[in-house]
Each structure stands twice: as structure tokens, then as C-alpha cells.
Length: 421
Image 1: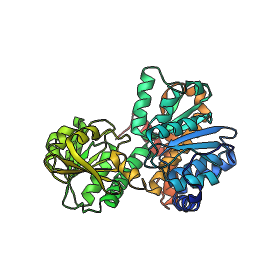
Image 2: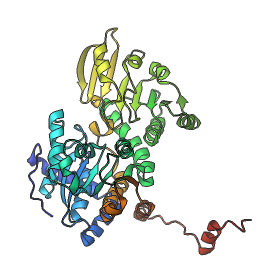
Image 3: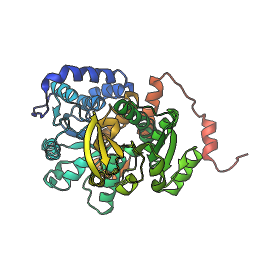
Image 4: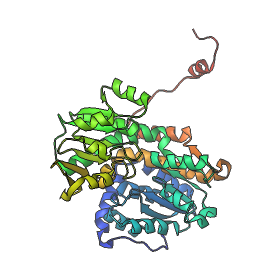
């Protein structure tokens, strides 16, 4: 379906490079390919407009094309200023999708691109971090009557949505894709774990083996980052505020310290909490010369750069995506990708095979909310388990893996409270 909307992108001539990227990921996303074929037959979004705000790189672009195949008129923007890839944007425009995104826009321009995406008057949305939802509930409330619902990608976004639901502000249903099994077990753990270290290693070109890596937060993303750091030969320290997760990290073989203690021993730091001020000036004051700070949480607030700048006598770019801050005592602290998502701002994000499952959930969840928005109401809902299982089974089939099925006798046994011997 060709769009009639005008796009705002950096360079249309980059389209051939972007197309190659999209073709590559499409070849490695078999689950989404299957959904695209089904959508093309069923046209579940025929006559509807869909607005998408995600990290705009090749895998996201292919999701947009899958939604388009379902009959939708699609408009897309980026969810982070440094993760947008201009060549991918150009390729999507050639495919008839309205794109409002550029790499590294100013804060004002970034905001205007989000608003321009909403000005397409969508019926459905896919959000990452809650920016579209927040704008719809604040400066663009005039568009609320037309919104049927949507799906949210991230932990941060779901926290914002649940806060809105709790105080009665949420005006349409949202599906919490991040909370689905096929999202957090694979995307958050294995996807984040690999892509974070892809970004750090590509950017720094330094050895990880033998170094002390501090992972702030031991949720599913933190688990993945810690596991991959261990695989690279690092000594891994975990900091936590949740006692249960701290015990889990300890039993997984990691050293657990307070951030005050960890600041003194760390050489690489990776924040993965979704909260602000995880690393502050007080922590930085304790760090070793040459400490490298990076963030894998959605917003650039986990490392307090304002306090770091105030402590510094100079700042300079020493490599692409590396800023060197020199403190008054001569120590140097390095920050990767301006404290933004290091795996996307300084890398290509999660592997295609991982995002195949996540974006399959997004596509199916969007269809689910469109079919059921009236009965769901103004709340945050889980991805139905049947959709989770559908994605998992499709993934297994794409790998040529078969699994067992319970017999009727086994099902009866599990369902019965009597006769267990």
C-alpha cells in the first residue's frame, strides 16, 4: 500500500544501501516472514493508519513492511536520536512508508518528528519507551478519539503505561509486549547481552578478558549483559536494589557489591536499570583512571552526565562515540554514545534472529488489540499466551526442531487432583 504522506529524512540517495540492510535481515527473520504472508492474505489493517516509534534500523524497517503488508498506511519515526540509520529511512520511503526520522537530530527536531508522525492521525501505534503515548496524552490529546490502541516494546515504556493506568490517565488499551515470554527470555537476555558487547567492543577496540565489568541491574537485560561479559573472560560485579535479584546474581556466580564499592574496582560499567542516577558524581569520584561508562537502559539518565561535566576540566571526542572527561586530579573517564543505548547508538542493535521473535509478537499483538480494543478497555494487558506459544512454535519450526506433545492420558493426569501416585 503506497502512502500519500510526505516524509522527512536526511538523504534519499542512500536508499540502495538501506535496501541491502533490510534484505539481509529479512533473510534471517523466518517467523516474521510467515506472518507477513498471512497478513498479505488477511489484510487485518486494511484502511487503517499505523504509527510506529522504534529504533529505526533494518529490523524495525522490516516490521514496518510487514504491517504495511497487512493493509495499513504506515508512518514511522525513531525512538532514539542516535539509533536511526539514514540509509534505512531512505529505503523505507521508496517502499511507500512515511518516515519522519534522521540520525542525531536536535532535541527540538526529535520532538517535532514524533509529532509529525502523530499528525498522520493513526488508528494504532507501536511504541518504544512511551514517547508516542505520552505525547498523545499531553500535547496531542486532540488525536485520542481516533486511537484504537497499541503495543509497547520496552520495560521503561511499560512502567510509564502502568503509572498512567494506575492514576486513570490511560485512554486506550496497550499490549505489554516486553512482558511476553518470547520477548524478555530471548530479546532482553540474549539480544541485549550480545548487542551491548557488540557496541562496546566495536567502539572501544579494547580487550574485555581479565577486566572488571560492573553491571548495574540484574533484570533480564542485566542477566544477559553479565553472562556475555563472563563469556568474554571478565570479572563480573553486579549491583542491585532488589534483594532477591541480588541473591540470584550471587548464586549465578557473580560478585555482588553496592555501587559505592563497585565504583572503586570497575573498569567497564554498564547500566541496565531503567532508572535515573545509577552512576552519579559521587560514584565517579571513586573510579579508576580510564573507567569506561556505558548505558543499556532506554533513556540517557542512568549516568549523571551533568555531574560528570561539572567535575571535569576538559572534554573531548577521542574516538567515534567516545567522549573523554578529564577530572581535576588528572584522571580520565570515558563515556560511550553520550550515555544513550550503547547497543543501538554505537552498534546495530539485537541480532536479526532475536528480533524476529520480538517483532513477530509486535505484529500479532497489534492485530490482537485491533480485533479486541473495545472489549479490552483503557488498560495495559499482557500478550495472550497463545500468541507467545505461536511465535515459539514458529521459531522451532524454522530451526527444524520438533518437540513432544502430551497424550490425552497425560493431560488428564495433570488436570486431576486425585489418583496421583
